[in-house]
Picture (cartoon, rainbow over the protein chains, first blue to last red):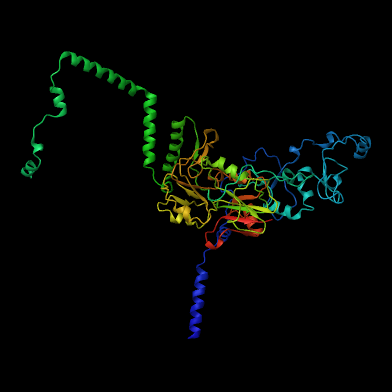
Length: 200
Length: 329
């Protein structure tokens, strides 16, 4: 008698579990699209966006980053930096320095200075911590040395801004398009409009 | 029968000349006859002139025809492609006839192999409200009642209680000790709102977007009561959108002009998303807290987020299966 009751109870429980509906994500995983954009593309919206192929993230599908150099006012640096940096610094002693408006507020002076990211030997380029050359368009490689989790999220799509639309191809903003590398802290500001209380 | 009728209604049997006969048999003098003829001639010429003005006559006739066809318009979901096309063209033409300006209404159907999904990064939202502003501008929402599809809730750190959240904040953001979380229609895969509609004026499209046929909606608001997320809005009066703020790029199931007495809601900006664009809120968000894409594309950003982040949904225990996930960095 006891055994029968247990069996009946088990059968009822199994029935409950079996009838639970499938989650939408599990369904989606089982039915992958043949083509991600469903016939639409962001190519037209991205027509004017100059881009560079992102390097160094093998475990995510290929994507591009909007070029940084086209947006920079003072580039190439060699327009002014015609002499070696040491000579320029010597000549400018006592005068207002060229990049007087840049005050580095990124980490502490003990951790970072200009040369942490800029390559002194070639001022058009950035540098890794081991002084390897990095192109300005690939500035994310410099940021990623310390901000590893952010870089991983950015490459996957959980951090940063996508350009164009949701449909492929995927082109994203560079880190420095939103974060000022010399002063990365975001200040408070007023919202663009007031909120609206519930029940109104 | 006839004898009974005669008894009951003797008046029926009285021989009286008809109105026309009376008029024709009337004795008139020459003066009255000339006066009447002159008046009739004037009136007749006036009528003829009005009838011959080709523009005014054909426009008013076309307007009447469009109104007539709209009155007998069926449920959009059940229409053949040709009927859908006619319906959309009718909207464009009616607007042009009434205002002299043109709009572009789309009837773009769902794309094959696409199921839209959305993710919201609670760590990234800073309460700037750019999304709400962009949503109102994009979707032609009623300015008079200040209608909004998106709510941004300001919550105290350590509390996840929508009842205690401040939705009406206006101060420097992000305020110290607070975080921000947005809600809108979650486009449930198992939507309770569409189940309760007595006239099937609201349904889920094959690409997962929950839409309303505003022309078919009877305004009973059952769907508003059924939605566990406060995602639907009702037009208590004729919506007001200033002409210079109107978004002329519209979709029949999306941001076209609504009328008094119908329910509306977020459509993931159907007029944008079905053309490969991001919804206005996603595009406007400065912080990148909003992520949108195709759930059926294993290479999409949304799928990466769902696979690599710890995500949650609101009131998941209800089994509504929202296609809108929250996560934190």
